[in-house]
Image (cartoon, rainbow, N blue to C red; front, side, top):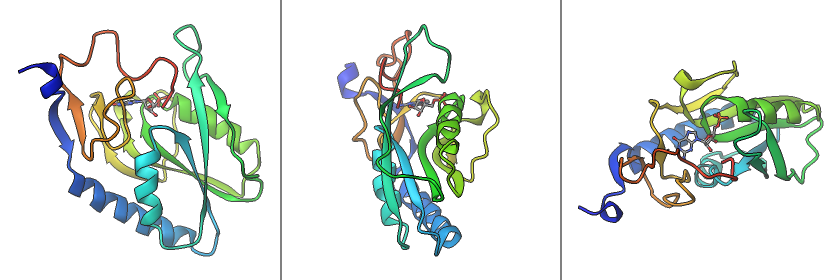
Amino acid sequence: MPTAARPISDVLLTEAQLRRRVSALGAAIAADYAGLDPLLVGVLRGVIVFMADLMRAIPIPFTVDFLAISSYGAQSQPGQVRLLKDLESNIEGRHVLFVEDMVDTGLTLHTLLRLLNERRPASLHVCTLFDKPRLRLVKLPLRYVGFELPDRYVVGYGLDYRQLYRNLPFVGALSAQVLLPNGGGTENDAT
Ligand code: 5GP
């Protein structure tokens, strides 16, 4: 069968599994942050689908803001990022929850947490939908984790391969024909 017809080799998480887990994360966040007026911070673009569903699963008042970053490319230090869009909110004294789609080596997140910590929030915690702990290179405290994933390149539910597949409502592994040997993701868009 041609690649275009079968881009996904197998489904790792169904729409129903994602919905259930995101609801549970939202309930836990609402319980922990009640009365704290938290600020949810996401990094464009991979987080948008998760953020949209998570927001609707948190039944307490909160605000939301976004960063956009790009990597410097193959020549750069791992985790080195360029800020394309900064937050519009002043986070000093705020309870900030950093919402991530995926933590892999953790280097990108490590850099971003350091940047946000310099702005003296009242608290700074992380909620990631996906965690690949076997690939971690830096120790990071992850307060909320949706799912641990094996070391496979996945797409769907906001995650892309060369900007495609973000619209899949499930999370799947790409077929070998699609996943070229020179690696996944995008060259400039870090998420
Ligand atoms: P790291 O933690 O290695 O610094 O980078 C994590 C970023 O790598 C994620 O935000 C995501 O953009 C990308 N990434 C890591 N694993 C995957 C994957 O399986 N699929 C997709 N689409 N992106 C991934």
